[in-house]
Image 1: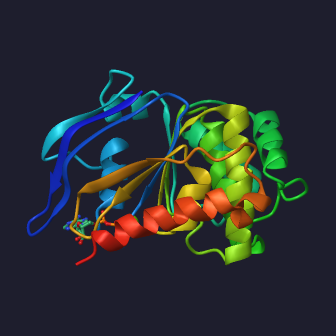
Image 2: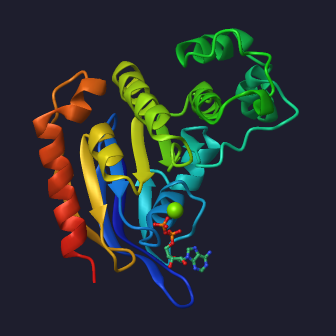
Length: 247
Ligand SMILES: Nc1ncnc2c1ncn2[C@@H]1O[C@H](COP(=O)(O)OP(=O)(O)O)[C@@H](O)[C@H]1O
Ligand SMILES: [Mg+2]
């Protein structure tokens, strides 16, 4: 379980995260949506121990984020894939655990790449892969770490819309199999609604949670969901909240 208590992160001229209280259960998929600059990345970095809070704190299964991270319990996926250009897809997946002193588990890495639809691309360098494929490798890399918690910062933000929907469907189905705890940050309302069990809405003023929606869409969530009325109603509700909190 992830617990945020009175979490505040202030920079010189802006409070990027202001008194945030949030509990995320083990195995829950939570999305965080809000306009650019509202503090999403800072919130995620604080959860992952990459950003020290100004006050309040974060506990991950009763531990500090940095201890959880040292234990290999947190996997990150960013908008920029951060793959090493000189390594193959497979080597990129195994690399982080090798850095931690383990011998590479190629079987596991191969199976993960297969499950992400990358069979046959194990030896390809990142430059030979499309944007969507690179993000699949980045997700496989996070899973290979064996982390229980996945922190994702606009991982599909630079992809075309169709690829983005496709990867969303795959991520949700992967989550149903693996039941990781996922915190997924995006500025896309449809993406936040499609993926989340709960959707946290941040407003224009930096750092504030304006509302938390229970999404409750039928499972499995496949591409047909995008055209369904319940989905569209929830998207409209989240949009309303965003507009109401827009100056
Ligand atoms: N390292 C930093 N130093 C100073 N200000 C920062 C820093 N990181 C973020 N900010 C500011 O905090 C606010 C929230 O930023 P960020 O968390 O990146 O928002 P988002 O990810 O929602 O676009 C912005 O006003 C941004 O300029
Ligand atoms: Mg951001």
